[in-house]
Image (cartoon, rainbow, N blue to C red; front, side, top):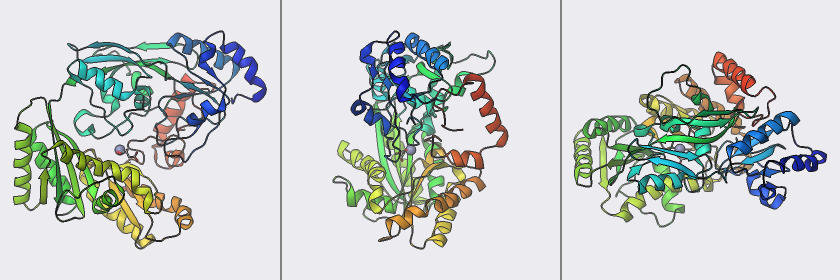
Length: 472
Ligand code: MLT
Ligand code: ZN
């Protein structure tokens, strides 16, 4: 399965009949950055990286690897959080040279792209055609659309536009035996039996190598309005969400929870970030409205909803950004939490979801249970409350010994995940399973679902050569 040292030279010779020698890399300095995951926890190894330029080459490579029993790890921008793209002796197949926009159809509101396109490249191409591609995540300047599809990426606009799988109309995939599945259709309606394309989305590269996709576009956004509100309590976050939806129809695109400790992290460690409101309250939200019309509509509706919520006692105080710098300041708070949270003495990350209405109960009871386990522990629950996905990260008490905290990782994970499970939630809402959540797959995934997943893997990849050891 792994490519052994003695196999390297003869295998490279065979590869050089398929791809250009420039696209066969054995230099460890070049391969190095592809061996470490985004979070920096996993260090893999691989003797070889290849960078093919078209699907026909990938098909021949898959056939060769299948015949020789050599495993492949497909890799996009290597920005995943669960080490799904990190090899353990397998060869890396990087899609980075497959980065062409194949076609854009403004009238159909579609764009068809190769899978190595950077997300921001697609956003830009849509914008240039007066259209909008809504997926937006922190790594958008370096993640690839193939990786976004393989991980069913989420981000800050899921409550309006859905996850990545809701944005994919068609897909092209090279299978383990080299067959090319061509389902690059640009259709909104296609009821011709099983939706095979969906099994490759969120499969983290374990079922085939995605080479291209057709994606949905939307009308261009002309006006964004950002607000920041402090809340009476956590239940008020759900009440305010209801009011915003009721008042604005579909203008609401982002609704992100910011706890007081998040404001502390942002103002203490972030780059020149100011507190948006006079008093720091325990629970706050960032609100974003997006409108296709460039007028005061979005601003006025947001103002009206916030005023109504203040009258109802749901919102304590609120501000609507009236300049680009105020907008940036609010979003910098959100980014700074992700970036600087480890400075609180370490962090244990959880990316979970529960039904939206259960978020307050989930957060409150998990905090209580964690505090029973370690008094003064510092949970930092933040993020996509508008779609029920909370990044429930946990930091140690002040001056707590770092190693002692690390040693408690599995107990802490268990407290969080068992509470998620009891509320009908998911232990992997957005970032996937990869290597790091395989244990939870066995414990919490429905047994029948797990059996079907194994059957599908065995059917499509009987020799287990595509990204072995991930998810299952
Ligand atoms: C985010 O929503 O900012 C990310 O999913 C958080 C993370 O990468 O941990
Ligand atoms: Zn997120």
